[in-house]
Length: 455
Image (cartoon, rainbow, N blue to C red; front, side, top):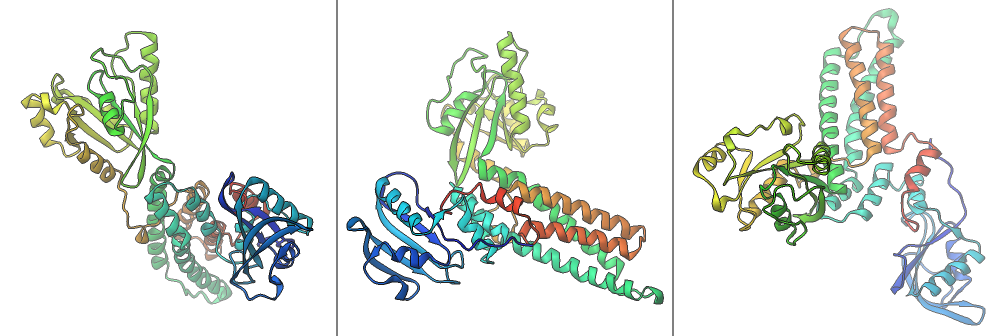
């Protein structure tokens, strides 16, 4: 059940805060056009056609505040599906404040964070996943985070949920029909077919859940930890990836005592690289703390770059248990290719998860960047992949998966149709929570409070 919509008119600055060439002030509500018309000197805006722009002046009594362009939108053909007005004015903070004050005096009130989008959602402009995608779109700072947000804004998640809902509703209806004819002992729903459908749904949901870590990493930046023994070239690699002298490079082992972190964009993805203390038996208490932090960073990484010294190390004696036990994608990197011994090169040529580079000579660094993207499994075709980066969606999909597993267990145990229908209804309710068909005021307030004011 959706909450009732307030009928008053709201106003807010829709463009970025601060001085600029122009700014945009937005009004939405039944009386939007009448309110702006009281302070606008030009054409009578109440008599103008929708989707038109009008030049004039904002005045307070006889004082001209600014010359503006006013765009008029009439319900239901606006973002909020209400009467709406957008005022394009000069970007002076005084002008912006003065115009908003005048609008409030005429009956508008300041909008709460995300209130325009909240009204659009309540008025049926889009579902809740699409509303949340707007916030992700505004926050996107890479091509891939933009693509994921755009796909979800166009209904990527919604389409997948509707597919799930339609299949479950169909079987729930047949099972409920059986209950109406319980005395005649008939079956309208094929249990084996339902088991197959539940298996397919849980498989798809698992794929969505598995993709959350990647989606969240793309949204916030992919954490990549560079690890290895002291003096294998971790700091040199960080510097060459960032294209700046970010870390101190020295022949003295144990130079890096704490982690060093910085970020770059590779093919539309933000990677957050962390150069860590070299892994060895610590020489002192401070180095020991740095090494402990290295292992903590590894546990939180989305990708690990494990460096080996091709010149002095023995690649064939490497112990990868510290990495493989973490169940995190990794790349074994043989560094110092320009000084490598032959035996180490032979070992690396046999290992498909490895790459030979020279960080000092900037050799094969482009190949490393491509391999990193491949290792993360980032597929740019988001039309055919449902990727979630929203923690709320992730939590609900876990609950849906649990409900479907309960349905599956009951089917295999030949539990009565009444209990199976009950479990299916629980899964359907969770699906409704994602799209906003089932919601509460507290949930909506929590979601839209994270939006910027004016959106």
